[in-house]
Image (cartoon, rainbow, N blue to C red; front, side, top):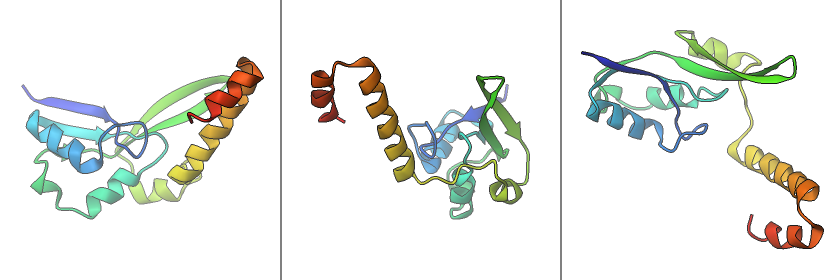
Length: 130
């Protein structure tokens, strides 16, 4: 029977592979429909517009996203499908931070965690590895 994968991540969020690599792998595995659901970003769909998709993948691509949100103090992930990519891109739900901004934010978080959990002299040594 037909195989589909409606929850794929690319390197635009926490996936290991770029958009073209994902398409090639889906084609190799004979998947007939995919949805790229990166966290809070739609960059992969703009990648698709710059290439001839059929060169890499013959199946159907359904627009998707994984939205992270907090409700009553808990973190939730919600999948959304089959929307207008450009409309959602303009909304306030999309994360517009650059990879550099995200990395520096993560580094700040790590510094803070080290401050909380690691004796200060070890923290200095640990900082050199990051």
